[in-house]
Image 1 (cartoon, rainbow, N blue to C red):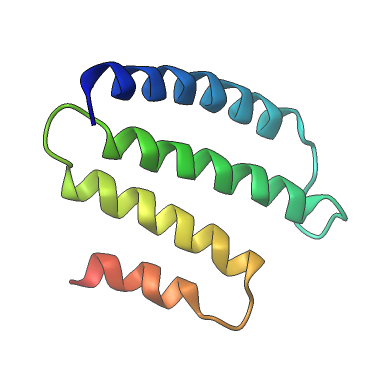
Image 2: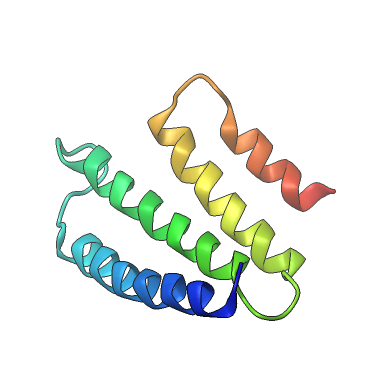
Length: 96
């Protein structure tokens, strides 16, 4: 990927990240509320943007940052995809 494209993607991702985090903070849903799943979807999008930013950094990808990103994505996804035991996969990231 050329540098200009990468910078443009990162710039757009910062805007998307800011808007996503603001939406998450404005959502007052608590676990068990009707809107909880939607709030978790916003959080999942936020974590996906973190992964995007981690992936496009200029330096080498930090294994710890990548683990943290994937752990968060799997943990949130576990709530949205019951029965797939994604928490076990997430936990396995830190045991290896």
